[in-house]
Length: 66
Image 1 (cartoon, rainbow, N blue to C red):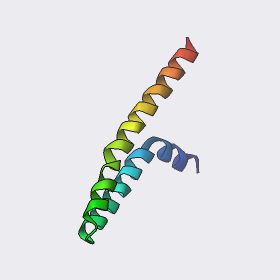
Image 2: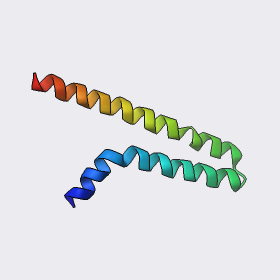
Image 3: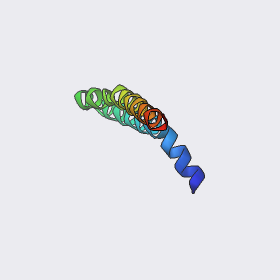
Image 4: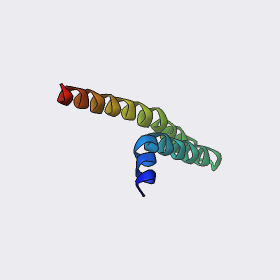
């Protein structure tokens, strides 16, 4: 279970962005083009938010260790 939690903690943004992308493609090809575009915008938002959060976490950890 610990191995899964370590994996999830590291790769959850990529997994969520992938599912968002797949959902966007499904919406687009089912005829809901506007909704597909809207959900497609989530992908870079999820990835950039995860980078920002990871950066903040590492900065916080570094400042605590000093």
